[in-house]
Image: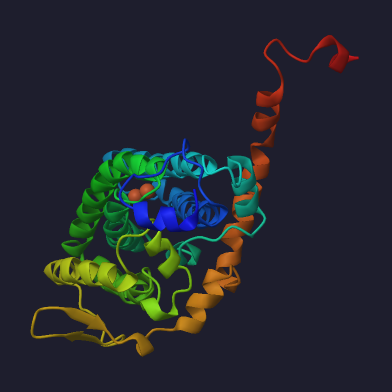
Amino acid sequence: MDLETVKRRASPREFSPKDDMPEEYRKAATRMIQFHANSEIMGAYLEKPFIRQAPSLDRKLAFSAKVQDEIGHGQLLYRAAENLGVKTREEMLDELADGRGKFLNCFHYPMESWEEVPMIGFFVDGAAMRRQATLKNTSWEPYAHAMDKICFEEGFHIKHGESILAELATGSKAQQERLQEAFEMWWPRILQFFGPTNEASTHHDFAADVGLKTMTNDELRQQFLNAYLPKAERYGLEIPDEPRIRRHDDGRYEVVEEDLDWDEFWTVAKNEYEPGLGQIDAREAAQEAVDWVRESMETPAGGPTPAAAD
Ligand SMILES: [Fe+2]
Ligand SMILES: [Fe+2]
C-alpha cells in the first residue's frame, strides 16, 4: 500500500498485520508503541519499591496488582508493536535496558515518599488515561485492541490512586504537608506529560495524517486540566503559582508554556537526566537477572539435544 492510500484510508482500527503497510507507517507506529510499552515498564519499576511501603495489607495487595498490570500492559504493547515487523519484543527490551529506549518524562524522576505515590497513581495515570482513551481509535488495529484491556485496567488504577490521595488528604497535618510538597514537586512534570505545544512536536503531523494519533498534545492537556484541576482542589491541594495557568472565559485552562523547564524536559527525553540514570541502570540489572529464564526457554523441551550435550 502506498502512503497516499494510507492517508486516504486512515481511520480507527483500519490497518492490521494482513495489510502491506509502507515502511514509513511501520516505523512511526513502532516508535509510538515502543515508547508507550517502555513507559509502562519503567512506571512499574518506579512504583514497585512502594509495595513494601504501602500502609496496610489491602493497600499492598491492590498496589502490587497495579504494578503487575503495568508490566502486563508493557508486554501487550510490545506484541502490538512486534506485529509491524520492524523490531522484535526482545530487541525493544534490550534497547530499554541499554539506555536507547525512550519513555515518558514522569518515569525518569526518582520517587522517594509514599505521598508521591498518588502523584503517579492518580495524576500521571489520569493523564495517561486521557491519551490512551483516544488510542482506542488509532489506525493500527493491534494497538487499539491492546488499548481496550489497558484502559479497562487503568480505570481501576485511577480509582486506587484517588483513594490513596483521599486518605492522605484527610490524614495528619504532617501527611497533608508532605502531600502538598509532593504535589508541588510533581505538578510541572505532570503538565509536561503531554509534551510541548504541537508546533514544537516533530512527529505529530505524520502520526495524525496516518491516523495513529487522533488528538493533539494541547487538546489532551486541555482535557486533563479541565478534569484534574478541580479534583486537585477538591482534595485540598493548592495549585502552585508557577507554572501560571490562565483560565479563559469559556472555562478553558491554558498553561503558560514558558514557565515550564523545557531544557530539562528534552534532557529527560534523551535519557540524559542525571538523577534518573539509576532507573535505566536498574532496568538493565533486572533484564540481566532473568537472562537465565530466557535462555532456558530457548532450550527445547526435554533438555538439550544429545548433540548439544556432547
Ligand atoms: Fe498502564
Ligand atoms: Fe496504570
